[in-house]
Amino acid sequence: MKNIVIACGGTGGHLTPGIALAQSLEVLGCPTWLFISQKQVDSRLASKYPELTFVAMPGVPLIKTPWGLLKFFKGFILSFVRSRIFFRKIDADVLVGFGGFSTAGPALAARTIGIPFHVHEANRVIGKAVRFLASRASRVYLPRGVTLPSISAEKISHIGYPLRSDFRRIPMERARKCMGVSMTDKLLLVLGGSQGASSLNKWVKNNLAQLAEDGISVYCLTGLREQNSGTVQLEGIGGETITSRFVSFSDQMHILMSAANLVISRAGAGSIAEIIKCRVPSILIPYPYAADGHQHANANYLEAKGGGLVCLEENINDKLLLEVREVMFNEEFRAVLRRNLYALDHDDVSSLLAKDLLKDLRVNKRSKVSAELLESRV
Image (cartoon, rainbow, N blue to C red):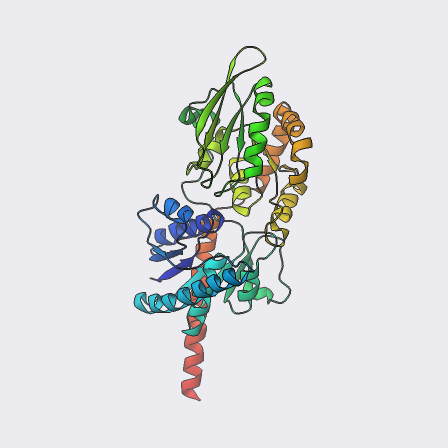
């Protein structure tokens, strides 16, 4: 039995794969603890999984201003110290980090007391935290086709984005029944990530009447920052009532995606993994200020694989409505997208990651024992 700590959190894209890995490890009999941030998005999602153990750790993202740097280093030092104490308290065997500001402090704390740590990168551009920690890690998990030349190939494992056990594609009819949406509706789902996207929310509001005229209803996740919720009913071109909904947050993304004909979304690795799992056609709007342009790389990869379309942020007012119409009313094209998404839906990633993690621990343990025996004989 191994005691495993998972450093995740800060955004839904970091936290949800940590939860997925914890679920698979618990099934295999390994106790797990998840280090999360003190942000609302973490505590809200964590409350849905009372069977898992979450530990809130200090820490904030790096902002390059004097006050931002001070807050970052204060959070880093506190998370480093508390992590060392926690690792010793539970006799931790390994740490797994999913990148971001929540990983660096615990990872370096683990290294100082001889606990191996693994890092996982979900995006197709490797983030600063993972680049910094990769050379010190026992194992580095990267998306298929992504390389890190400075790291030994033996240390790298190419593996995808783990999805929670409760995230699964369900039949559209059942999904729409859960949402109270008719099977005859053309449903457009608009997502801005866990924090929302003001530009996408604004686009929906500006184009709601035109979408209604086309018979398209909208389900828009506005994000926790805006806290906007409500229902808008407009008259369609045939006199029918078109109902659109605005919701600040949902923890039932598999239902929403399974119900939608088309998704407009940012291009985080988590959103793309969910789109692939639910095989829902999408138009991706990469966040233009994402670190190192990783959302552009993610979106371009999916488009190159024939799984979706890309519309740049600067083009949404001129082109997005036209693209929505072209995809929404072309069933043959949507069928092609769904087939390509099916081809991208690989194995149960969280189970593969859990098994690879435990295998690596066993190999390292045998190597350590062999080295100790050799040293004792010398």
